[in-house]
Length: 82
Image (cartoon, rainbow, N blue to C red; front, top):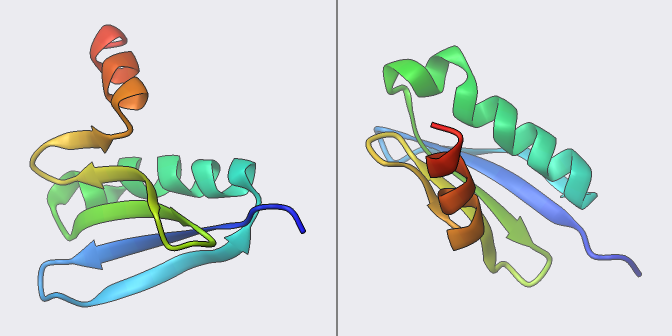
């Protein structure tokens, strides 16, 4: 069975919402990009977005005040692209 991923966004009031569950890596990363660049993330409604694998390990993380924080390769790539 192929690896699947989920994308979750967190809000200021400790609530969270899974915006994708058990999808391909490509679909998860497309959703991750969308939810880290939309209006809610720009104005601070969304505080955190993560991608987890089927083992519930975090594969990517974005924080409102810090931007992309994990994995290191993504952080470095975003720094290089300005």
